[in-house]
Length: 300
Image (cartoon, rainbow, N blue to C red; front, top):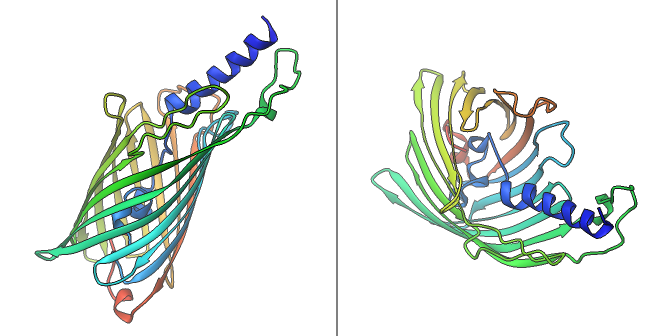
């Protein structure tokens, strides 16, 4: 096998795993911070929210996806919300960076809310040639250039005291991030979910159904249920299509501070050498008015 063929094979395998198989970040705990998966949630409360999230997928598998995210949002008037999100992903030898600015508009409908959001921004891709080697362990000698493109998401969200339902379309422009003479088009992704909360004294039960699909492509589905104990701790578990099982917990630490952790693993041992996927979350809310801290929030 020639050097050129080996390098080409490495690139094709990386693209197959990074661009075709998983283009967008996976998540278990979208309920911890709704804004991360549906930008129309921006400014729904009268406070400013800041959140950090890190996910290490398929621990112990070299080149498996890793995601870090910073997000923030706040109200900017009675019906306007805004925010931003910065996300960095590494999949194999590929690095992706997403930067979004969010503007949301929401209005009242019979004691409930309907919100819309547009999130324009940039997406960048880069290839780490330092991690690619030939069969003789000789380092590759090319320096590929990174690529940037405009991108946008659109979101719709319905919210009442007990029901939350939303849909978000990502990569509206299907940006073409071509580098190393390979075209890497980001497909449109559609994420939809519905959650219902049933209060029981100082506790609550919240079932959640969600789905993600690429038009004309793959569909994934997950179902979970959470229990809210004494207005302090969320504990839950769920199942995702593809035989993945996950658990989650979130702690109310006081003064607007929250922390969460989730894990998941394949129930049929599809990746026997993996130690599962792990995700940690930390958020803080700063009240902009006294009323924003007076009620229990089942959706955040």
